Length: 603
Image (cartoon, rainbow, N blue to C red; front, side, top):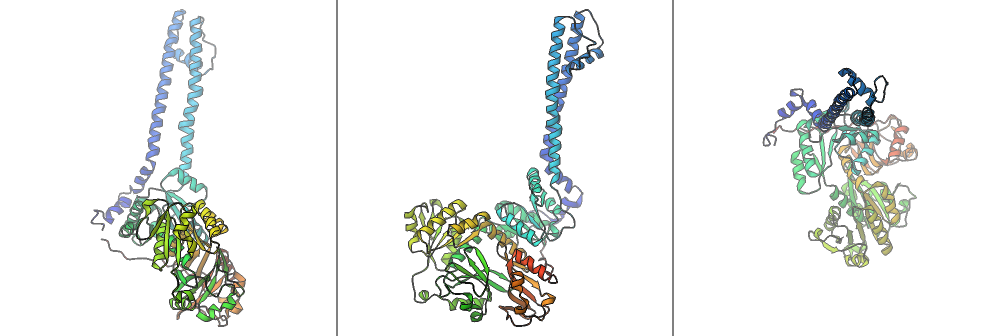
């Protein structure tokens, strides 16, 4: 691929290190606007200085003429001396005019000098000395390279909601990161608010060399498809082994990004749409896998439509019936660790861990009687025909759900889906889309205010319907739950989770923002004890999902079996719970993270 483009690694390396001019070239690139501004400032200063010299020469000449008219003669140095003392308003009074014309001339010189020296010069000083100094100080705030000692860090190329959520996860896990910004002033602003930033053009290999990309754990390209392709190709040239994750807005860009060097391409709209469909489909006891960790399938399953409603987990007896790991219960955004006395409601979602066979047995055990009898096909209404809405519709269709999409823009009518063109706030449009007999409604617009409005409206129309809503900003998630949503998926959390899980797939799975499945070596103090004796949940609020030994993974471990040495615990918990576990069991250290190094051909 490199040969076809006429580029060789040697050429790239020579650009960076061959002549020693790589960093100087980057500096020139970054400093070009500043140098142009300095050149303009120098021209202005020279012009003002020339005007000042011309004024002094003119006034000194006129001084000579007027003094000659009064019958007096002075040398040229004395003429310049009088002119400067008058222009600066010093006025020693040792040389004065006696005629009215001379005194009028003195007033003109004084006013001209005052205007020029007391107004123009301070302006020049502020504009061309003080402000450039301030700008230079600001420019130097944001670094242009990362320390040589940095290792296993994340390199980000943009700062949006997804990246902000990813930074929060990185801070929590104490993973270093850096955001590359090509605008000096923006980099300074971000640096001032405490973010780790670095200045540099995104399309220059030297930028990534300075970011220590060879030692990085991952590079995240999350701009437009064309820019992401450039970033992936640039990084891959100089760092063959680093993981590159890129986002894509169009399906056609996926192959291009992979050819450019991206290890994984994520279509965030499609991921979010599929996740929303999974939440809508997680009804009537059917499980839907939302992640995989250490060989375990992590799945959600709704209890609405099953005989689990209004029963406790102890009465459901799921662990013994299916040998599944029961992680906890979601109820309208609130997560609760599985407790025997937890009561299940129609809006509850079970969070399960087990093998594919175990999940299939679970599904068979809770297959809805109406489905077995050949009842009507499940129905759903998708509000919003953008990328997220279309992806949600496609996922629903694959599961055999009958759905319609409400969209205001007729040009978005694509594929074989049933579209209803109109405003979802119009009751007749919702009726035409089939909301009266739908099992679920998915609200997928990119405007949180609209989503809150439509969530509240749909809940008022159909108190019994399942509502899955999209949130663009994390701060609106709780508002959407209060408005009546059964499940809310944040665009930022969904994107950051997909990226983070790719980075730490051997160590941790992010289920939702702040909720993780993670592994820990068996604490020495727990070896030989049973889970019932260890009281891990009471001490840390973490729940043991499985135990991994050299012989395999045991989901839903027996609480009365002694814990073996050399094993690893797979636990689920919030950020705070994970910290409590580390404090309660200081001898359980996270194993070193394995970097995923790959061999690549030079061609």
